[in-house]
Image (cartoon, rainbow, N blue to C red; front, top):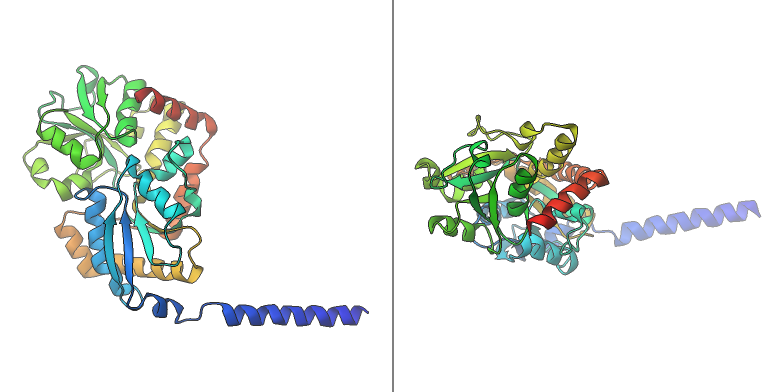
Length: 345
Protein backbone atom coordinates (compact mmCIF):
# COMPACT_ATOMS: atom_id res chain seq x y z
CA UNK A 1 0.00 0.00 0.00
CA UNK A 2 2.83 2.38 0.89
CA UNK A 3 4.44 1.71 -2.49
CA UNK A 4 1.14 2.53 -4.19
CA UNK A 5 0.86 5.85 -2.35
CA UNK A 6 4.49 6.60 -3.19
CA UNK A 7 3.90 5.94 -6.89
CA UNK A 8 0.71 8.03 -6.87
CA UNK A 9 2.55 10.91 -5.20
CA UNK A 10 5.32 10.71 -7.79
CA UNK A 11 2.76 10.79 -10.62
CA UNK A 12 1.04 13.83 -9.02
CA UNK A 13 4.31 15.72 -8.70
CA UNK A 14 5.23 14.98 -12.30
CA UNK A 15 1.81 16.14 -13.46
CA UNK A 16 2.15 19.38 -11.52
CA UNK A 17 5.60 20.03 -12.95
CA UNK A 18 4.30 19.34 -16.46
CA UNK A 19 1.41 21.76 -15.93
CA UNK A 20 3.73 24.50 -14.73
CA UNK A 21 6.08 23.98 -17.65
CA UNK A 22 3.23 23.87 -20.14
CA UNK A 23 1.22 26.84 -18.90
CA UNK A 24 3.95 29.14 -17.52
CA UNK A 25 5.01 32.02 -19.78
CA UNK A 26 7.95 31.05 -21.92
CA UNK A 27 11.06 33.14 -22.61
CA UNK A 28 9.37 34.96 -25.48
CA UNK A 29 6.14 35.72 -23.58
CA UNK A 30 6.87 39.36 -22.77
CA UNK A 31 8.33 40.12 -26.19
CA UNK A 32 5.30 38.59 -27.92
CA UNK A 33 2.97 40.44 -25.58
CA UNK A 34 4.63 43.89 -25.51
CA UNK A 35 5.79 44.03 -29.11
CA UNK A 36 3.61 46.35 -31.16
CA UNK A 37 1.62 47.41 -28.09
CA UNK A 38 1.21 50.88 -26.61
CA UNK A 39 2.21 51.00 -22.96
CA UNK A 40 0.53 53.53 -20.67
CA UNK A 41 2.63 55.44 -18.14
CA UNK A 42 0.30 56.99 -15.57
CA UNK A 43 1.63 60.15 -13.87
CA UNK A 44 -0.28 61.00 -10.70
CA UNK A 45 0.51 64.74 -10.87
CA UNK A 46 -0.51 67.58 -13.21
CA UNK A 47 1.51 68.34 -16.35
CA UNK A 48 4.52 70.60 -15.96
CA UNK A 49 5.74 69.46 -12.55
CA UNK A 50 8.81 67.44 -11.66
CA UNK A 51 7.17 64.00 -11.82
CA UNK A 52 5.82 64.83 -15.26
CA UNK A 53 9.22 65.97 -16.57
CA UNK A 54 10.90 62.78 -15.33
CA UNK A 55 8.11 60.58 -16.70
CA UNK A 56 8.34 62.01 -20.21
CA UNK A 57 12.08 61.36 -20.21
CA UNK A 58 11.47 57.77 -19.05
CA UNK A 59 8.85 57.28 -21.78
CA UNK A 60 11.39 58.23 -24.43
CA UNK A 61 14.14 55.89 -23.23
CA UNK A 62 12.61 52.92 -21.39
CA UNK A 63 10.95 51.58 -24.55
CA UNK A 64 14.41 50.92 -26.03
CA UNK A 65 15.06 48.35 -23.31
CA UNK A 66 11.66 46.66 -23.27
CA UNK A 67 11.17 43.62 -25.54
CA UNK A 68 9.50 44.65 -28.78
CA UNK A 69 10.23 48.36 -28.10
CA UNK A 70 6.58 49.26 -27.40
CA UNK A 71 5.45 52.89 -27.58
CA UNK A 72 4.91 54.47 -24.15
CA UNK A 73 2.14 57.06 -23.81
CA UNK A 74 2.17 59.41 -20.80
CA UNK A 75 -1.19 60.15 -19.17
CA UNK A 76 -1.64 62.50 -16.21
CA UNK A 77 -4.09 61.57 -13.45
CA UNK A 78 -3.66 64.23 -10.77
CA UNK A 79 -5.48 64.62 -7.47
CA UNK A 80 -5.24 64.24 -3.69
CA UNK A 81 -1.45 64.55 -3.47
CA UNK A 82 -1.02 61.71 -5.96
CA UNK A 83 -3.42 59.31 -4.21
CA UNK A 84 -5.95 59.46 -7.06
CA UNK A 85 -3.43 57.97 -9.47
CA UNK A 86 -1.99 55.54 -6.92
CA UNK A 87 -5.47 54.23 -6.09
CA UNK A 88 -6.24 53.80 -9.78
CA UNK A 89 -3.02 51.88 -10.37
CA UNK A 90 -3.75 49.67 -7.37
CA UNK A 91 -7.45 49.04 -7.94
CA UNK A 92 -8.28 49.44 -11.63
CA UNK A 93 -5.24 49.40 -13.91
CA UNK A 94 -4.66 46.25 -16.01
CA UNK A 95 -2.17 43.92 -14.34
CA UNK A 96 -0.75 42.47 -17.54
CA UNK A 97 2.25 44.77 -18.01
CA UNK A 98 0.57 47.29 -20.32
CA UNK A 99 0.31 49.94 -17.58
CA UNK A 100 2.80 51.25 -15.04
CA UNK A 101 2.89 54.45 -13.07
CA UNK A 102 4.79 57.07 -11.13
CA UNK A 103 3.31 58.89 -8.16
CA UNK A 104 4.21 60.89 -5.09
CA UNK A 105 6.98 59.04 -3.28
CA UNK A 106 5.16 59.82 -0.03
CA UNK A 107 2.27 57.42 -0.75
CA UNK A 108 3.69 54.70 1.57
CA UNK A 109 4.06 57.44 4.19
CA UNK A 110 0.39 58.45 3.75
CA UNK A 111 -0.62 54.81 4.05
CA UNK A 112 1.35 54.48 7.29
CA UNK A 113 -0.51 57.53 8.61
CA UNK A 114 -3.85 55.92 7.78
CA UNK A 115 -4.89 58.66 5.36
CA UNK A 116 -8.55 58.15 4.45
CA UNK A 117 -7.90 58.51 0.73
CA UNK A 118 -5.15 55.88 0.61
CA UNK A 119 -6.94 52.70 -0.52
CA UNK A 120 -3.74 50.99 -1.71
CA UNK A 121 -1.29 48.69 0.05
CA UNK A 122 2.14 49.99 -0.85
CA UNK A 123 3.95 46.73 -0.22
CA UNK A 124 1.75 45.07 -2.83
CA UNK A 125 2.80 47.35 -5.68
CA UNK A 126 5.22 45.73 -8.12
CA UNK A 127 8.08 48.19 -7.63
CA UNK A 128 10.27 48.79 -10.69
CA UNK A 129 12.71 51.30 -9.19
CA UNK A 130 13.17 55.01 -8.46
CA UNK A 131 15.24 57.71 -10.11
CA UNK A 132 16.37 60.05 -7.35
CA UNK A 133 17.19 60.39 -3.67
CA UNK A 134 16.99 64.17 -3.73
CA UNK A 135 15.64 65.73 -0.53
CA UNK A 136 12.49 67.77 -0.40
CA UNK A 137 12.95 71.40 0.56
CA UNK A 138 10.78 73.91 2.39
CA UNK A 139 11.05 77.02 0.26
CA UNK A 140 10.34 80.74 0.42
CA UNK A 141 10.50 83.45 -2.19
CA UNK A 142 12.91 86.36 -2.03
CA UNK A 143 9.93 88.53 -1.06
CA UNK A 144 9.16 86.56 2.10
CA UNK A 145 11.50 88.60 4.29
CA UNK A 146 13.31 85.53 5.68
CA UNK A 147 16.39 83.72 4.43
CA UNK A 148 16.99 81.06 7.10
CA UNK A 149 14.93 78.70 9.22
CA UNK A 150 15.92 80.71 12.29
CA UNK A 151 14.43 83.86 10.76
CA UNK A 152 11.23 81.92 10.02
CA UNK A 153 10.75 81.65 13.79
CA UNK A 154 10.56 85.42 14.05
CA UNK A 155 8.26 86.32 11.16
CA UNK A 156 5.05 84.88 9.73
CA UNK A 157 5.43 83.43 6.24
CA UNK A 158 2.44 82.33 4.14
CA UNK A 159 3.00 78.90 2.61
CA UNK A 160 0.96 77.48 -0.28
CA UNK A 161 -0.01 73.80 -0.22
CA UNK A 162 -2.26 71.25 -1.88
CA UNK A 163 -4.96 69.25 -0.12
CA UNK A 164 -2.90 68.04 2.80
CA UNK A 165 0.24 66.17 1.74
CA UNK A 166 3.86 66.94 2.58
CA UNK A 167 3.35 70.53 1.38
CA UNK A 168 1.21 70.89 4.49
CA UNK A 169 3.00 68.48 6.81
CA UNK A 170 6.52 69.88 6.66
CA UNK A 171 5.68 73.47 7.66
CA UNK A 172 3.17 72.20 10.26
CA UNK A 173 5.83 69.90 11.71
CA UNK A 174 8.34 72.75 11.89
CA UNK A 175 5.76 74.99 13.58
CA UNK A 176 5.02 72.33 16.21
CA UNK A 177 8.62 71.32 16.96
CA UNK A 178 11.06 74.17 16.43
CA UNK A 179 8.65 77.12 16.59
CA UNK A 180 8.48 78.50 13.05
CA UNK A 181 5.52 80.75 12.18
CA UNK A 182 4.37 79.37 8.84
CA UNK A 183 0.79 80.22 7.88
CA UNK A 184 -0.40 77.35 5.65
CA UNK A 185 -2.90 78.03 2.87
CA UNK A 186 -4.26 74.78 1.39
CA UNK A 187 -6.42 73.99 -1.62
CA UNK A 188 -4.04 74.40 -4.55
CA UNK A 189 -4.37 71.55 -7.09
CA UNK A 190 -0.63 70.89 -7.32
CA UNK A 191 2.87 72.29 -7.15
CA UNK A 192 2.61 74.21 -10.43
CA UNK A 193 -0.42 76.09 -9.06
CA UNK A 194 1.51 77.00 -5.90
CA UNK A 195 4.44 78.25 -7.99
CA UNK A 196 2.04 80.47 -9.92
CA UNK A 197 0.64 81.77 -6.62
CA UNK A 198 4.20 82.64 -5.56
CA UNK A 199 4.62 84.62 -8.79
CA UNK A 200 1.40 86.53 -8.00
CA UNK A 201 2.58 87.03 -4.39
CA UNK A 202 -0.55 85.27 -3.11
CA UNK A 203 1.76 83.13 -1.00
CA UNK A 204 5.41 83.49 -0.07
CA UNK A 205 6.59 79.92 -0.30
CA UNK A 206 5.80 76.24 -0.75
CA UNK A 207 5.99 73.57 1.93
CA UNK A 208 7.55 70.75 -0.12
CA UNK A 209 9.47 70.67 -3.39
CA UNK A 210 12.68 68.77 -4.19
CA UNK A 211 15.48 71.18 -5.07
CA UNK A 212 15.99 69.06 -8.18
CA UNK A 213 12.49 70.07 -9.30
CA UNK A 214 13.33 73.75 -9.03
CA UNK A 215 16.40 73.13 -11.20
CA UNK A 216 14.30 71.29 -13.77
CA UNK A 217 11.21 73.50 -13.89
CA UNK A 218 12.29 76.95 -12.64
CA UNK A 219 16.08 77.23 -13.17
CA UNK A 220 15.77 80.99 -13.65
CA UNK A 221 14.31 81.32 -10.14
CA UNK A 222 17.43 79.71 -8.70
CA UNK A 223 19.76 81.68 -10.93
CA UNK A 224 18.10 84.99 -10.00
CA UNK A 225 17.77 84.13 -6.31
CA UNK A 226 13.97 84.24 -6.40
CA UNK A 227 13.52 81.02 -4.42
CA UNK A 228 15.39 79.95 -1.27
CA UNK A 229 15.58 76.64 0.60
CA UNK A 230 15.22 76.85 4.38
CA UNK A 231 15.30 73.14 5.27
CA UNK A 232 16.08 69.87 3.48
CA UNK A 233 13.81 66.90 4.26
CA UNK A 234 15.74 63.75 3.41
CA UNK A 235 18.60 61.56 4.54
CA UNK A 236 20.98 62.93 1.90
CA UNK A 237 21.86 66.57 1.38
CA UNK A 238 21.52 68.12 -2.04
CA UNK A 239 25.07 68.97 -3.15
CA UNK A 240 23.86 72.42 -4.22
CA UNK A 241 22.71 73.18 -0.66
CA UNK A 242 25.66 72.44 1.63
CA UNK A 243 24.69 75.15 4.13
CA UNK A 244 20.96 74.36 4.30
CA UNK A 245 20.21 72.14 7.31
CA UNK A 246 18.44 68.80 7.03
CA UNK A 247 15.31 68.37 9.11
CA UNK A 248 17.01 65.62 11.12
CA UNK A 249 19.84 68.06 11.94
CA UNK A 250 17.30 70.22 13.80
CA UNK A 251 16.25 67.48 16.24
CA UNK A 252 16.85 68.32 19.91
CA UNK A 253 15.55 65.10 21.48
CA UNK A 254 15.40 61.36 20.83
CA UNK A 255 11.70 61.66 20.03
CA UNK A 256 12.35 64.39 17.44
CA UNK A 257 15.15 62.31 15.92
CA UNK A 258 12.71 59.41 15.38
CA UNK A 259 9.97 61.75 14.22
CA UNK A 260 12.14 63.57 11.71
CA UNK A 261 13.68 60.28 10.54
CA UNK A 262 10.24 58.84 9.76
CA UNK A 263 9.27 61.93 7.80
CA UNK A 264 12.59 62.01 5.92
CA UNK A 265 12.83 58.34 4.88
CA UNK A 266 10.62 58.64 1.79
CA UNK A 267 13.13 60.92 0.05
CA UNK A 268 15.30 57.84 -0.55
CA UNK A 269 12.73 56.65 -3.11
CA UNK A 270 12.12 59.93 -4.94
CA UNK A 271 10.50 59.54 -8.41
CA UNK A 272 9.36 55.90 -7.96
CA UNK A 273 7.89 53.68 -10.71
CA UNK A 274 5.67 50.65 -10.19
CA UNK A 275 3.44 48.16 -11.94
CA UNK A 276 0.08 47.32 -10.35
CA UNK A 277 -0.07 44.54 -7.74
CA UNK A 278 -0.04 41.05 -9.13
CA UNK A 279 2.01 41.80 -12.23
CA UNK A 280 3.39 38.54 -13.71
CA UNK A 281 6.82 37.94 -12.14
CA UNK A 282 8.47 37.61 -15.55
CA UNK A 283 7.03 40.95 -16.66
CA UNK A 284 8.15 42.68 -13.44
CA UNK A 285 11.65 41.26 -13.92
CA UNK A 286 11.75 42.55 -17.51
CA UNK A 287 10.66 46.03 -16.40
CA UNK A 288 13.25 46.07 -13.63
CA UNK A 289 16.04 45.02 -15.96
CA UNK A 290 14.94 47.58 -18.57
CA UNK A 291 14.78 50.30 -15.91
CA UNK A 292 18.27 49.49 -14.62
CA UNK A 293 19.71 49.46 -18.14
CA UNK A 294 17.98 52.75 -18.93
CA UNK A 295 19.50 54.49 -15.90
CA UNK A 296 22.96 53.33 -17.06
CA UNK A 297 22.38 54.64 -20.59
CA UNK A 298 24.81 57.47 -21.36
CA UNK A 299 22.32 59.26 -23.61
CA UNK A 300 19.61 59.05 -20.93
CA UNK A 301 21.97 60.48 -18.33
CA UNK A 302 23.13 63.23 -20.68
CA UNK A 303 19.57 64.34 -21.39
CA UNK A 304 18.70 64.22 -17.69
CA UNK A 305 21.67 66.46 -16.99
CA UNK A 306 20.61 68.82 -19.77
CA UNK A 307 17.15 69.03 -18.16
CA UNK A 308 18.71 69.60 -14.71
CA UNK A 309 17.20 66.37 -13.40
CA UNK A 310 18.82 64.69 -10.43
CA UNK A 311 19.71 61.02 -11.00
CA UNK A 312 20.50 58.77 -8.04
CA UNK A 313 18.52 55.61 -8.87
CA UNK A 314 17.38 52.79 -6.63
CA UNK A 315 16.48 49.28 -7.81
CA UNK A 316 13.01 47.85 -7.36
CA UNK A 317 14.30 45.60 -4.60
CA UNK A 318 15.77 48.60 -2.74
CA UNK A 319 12.48 50.51 -3.02
CA UNK A 320 10.64 47.48 -1.57
CA UNK A 321 12.91 47.63 1.51
CA UNK A 322 12.34 51.38 1.98
CA UNK A 323 8.57 50.90 1.76
CA UNK A 324 8.74 48.13 4.38
CA UNK A 325 10.83 50.36 6.66
CA UNK A 326 8.29 53.20 6.43
CA UNK A 327 5.36 50.90 7.16
CA UNK A 328 7.20 49.39 10.14
CA UNK A 329 7.50 52.72 11.98
CA UNK A 330 6.51 52.51 15.69
CA UNK A 331 2.85 53.45 16.28
CA UNK A 332 3.63 56.30 18.70
CA UNK A 333 5.72 58.12 16.08
CA UNK A 334 3.02 57.60 13.45
CA UNK A 335 0.39 58.92 15.86
CA UNK A 336 2.37 62.11 16.52
CA UNK A 337 2.70 62.88 12.81
CA UNK A 338 -0.97 62.00 12.23
CA UNK A 339 -1.97 64.52 14.90
CA UNK A 340 0.10 67.22 13.23
CA UNK A 341 -1.52 66.49 9.88
CA UNK A 342 -4.98 66.81 11.44
CA UNK A 343 -4.18 70.14 13.13
CA UNK A 344 -2.71 71.63 9.93
CA UNK A 345 -5.91 71.10 7.90
